[in-house]
Amino acid sequence: MRLDKFICKSTELTRTEAKKVLKSGEVRVNNEVAKNAAMQVHENNLITIDGQQLSARGSRYYILHKIVDTICSNVDEIYPSVLHSLEVDKAFDLHIAGRLDADTTGLVLITDDGRWSHNVISPKKQCQKTYRVWLRSEIDDDKLSALVARFDSGLQLQGEDSLTRPAILTRVEIDNLVDEASYRSEVLLTITEGKYHQVKRMFAAVGNRVVGLHREQIGKITLGDLAPGEWRELTEDEITQFS
Image (cartoon, rainbow, N blue to C red; front, side, top):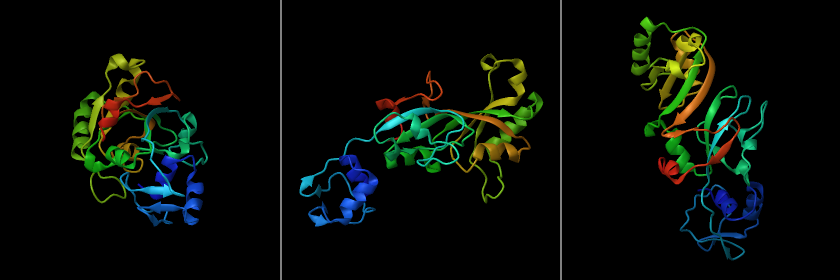
């Protein structure tokens, strides 16, 4: 963990304030003055400010049901950050483990544990993310099997050197649809990586267009009955999935 982040997790100081304290020479790591905010430290290191030993608070883990026209960023841009919806102390010290576009809704995981979020987003970890996708053009039943095979084999995206990892494309059960007219234009897609605009680009690669996108699941974690804009802490079992 970065030294400035450790200080923030051990005190009420902001990241900016922590850097000022570091520059003043008041911080020691294992009895040696430390001024480099990016210095990597561990919980077993002796870290003090003016002789007072610091002890980092435990990491935090949340799930949020993202609404449209919000962004997965720690800085507001054209749209506000999803972190405004999180009513916790120092929400903007957290980060998003797997971002969604502004026009995409659904499941977002938020934490201050860098190793944990790496396990969520790293393609090497093969973490499955499932999306409900609404398409401009309907997929006829007689073409579905061939399309499923193409997604399973990997697709060549524009600007990419390699194929996408195998993805699982399935038809949404008709009982879960509002009306039968949606049957041929609504699918579920499960991927294990997170390239830029990946889901939209995958359907573009097969001649279709995504007109609506909603993330339903990451690993075994689902939104459940969490309403749009609502959030909660993750359970211990949910956290340990990616520990």
